[in-house]
Length: 615
Image 1 (cartoon, helix red, strand yellow):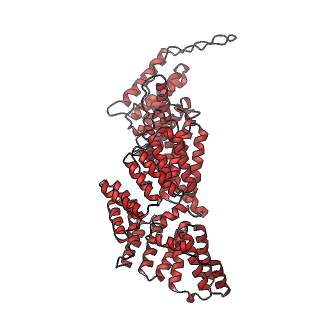
Image 2: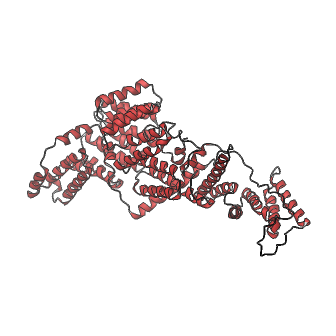
């Protein structure tokens, strides 16, 4: 896995991710927090858990005394005490390394040696090693709390003791304390990095830092727990969401085959809604009022004025609710109202409200096209609620509602997305091909099919066929050149990819994807382009503050460049703010995982006594 995938596993969120995006970054040169995980690619080997302490001296070296003080008498250790100490320690080593090992007895003999070392100042230099060794024995006896106590004693004297850091990480994980385990894993990496740095400075070949094997599992456990905690706090506070970005809503609406026709109708709508609504209200015509508000909302929706559209849907709902004679409203109008209300409730993440609205619309809708669209939108709500089985059921019912197959393209388009989420690319390809067969002009379906074909290793001609068709159908559509750039990126044609991303950016400045894709490509071309890449990630977030992919890329880059604790803390704060607005649970886990990793790095650095992350 790539280093940034080890941090947060976000590769699945991107349409195309070339395998070498971050490989141009030198391991030895990496300076910041995220740089530490570059060494997580190396599988660690077994290490001797015991410290082989030097034999005790006959007398410690004398400290030079101040001129005004009389010389202190040299401390010494009785030969009998020395022999007893050495015998205890030797016995402990033999028992530890016996076959089979006798760890409990070894711990007892190390305790005897510890007691002697504590009682005699001449043996003080042995104490750290002895506590480490007894801790190793106690861990193997599952006396974990006692082992942790010994670990604390060692680290109080030597915070850079790598063996103890690794042991504490193991024990904390066994005790179900992954957050503390992650701090110890980070501390171990920092200690190893410092040794590696010193070796390089001395002109020697240093050993690459190697983390514990389960580093990713620990990070995931911590990130997931933090995400669950955030969700629970959100639920307890009754937190609500605002509207997502304009780009996000547009991308959702574009998945429906009727999008272009509706956008054209919106562009040509010349109705004087202000005058018409005033007349309807003066006549107390509730039906006409609701109908006009819905038409104006529909026009605003497909003109990308989503806040205005939502306001009109809410006004229409309020007018309907106040109406004294609801029997006067025709069923198709009520179905349209409930469907529009369901869409905007979904957009603000009111999933229960959206589900209820779509259920009411289905109860009144009689046309196959209306029933199919309603069920597809209801399936999307269930996907966001994490209920994939219910989403499947809605999509299957949508197919049954249209036996003629005249309106099923949307079903296949959205079922393909569900199958991509499940990593069933073969089934996704079949659905996208069925969508295109039913609606040959569906540009987004062709672009997604091209993406799936790339991931399935299809022949280049098949991929190019879909891209060429999409370009013929929509030569001024930003997403066409965005995907063309991604294909070139997958072929390692970096300059060609950037050229296509620039075209996509020029056609639609509100599309964040080509912005962050260009940033990733720049880093791959030249690691010294990191600051320009950062500007592109920031530009992507400026046009779409909810773009989690851009946020993840930006946070990882800033963490990698962070040399001071304040810089790393700023990224932690940025990720914390993003978590408050994140709707998707999987994305929330990714955000919280990176944030928890950064927090652990900060805690570890301070714990081992570093003052910065500078390499």
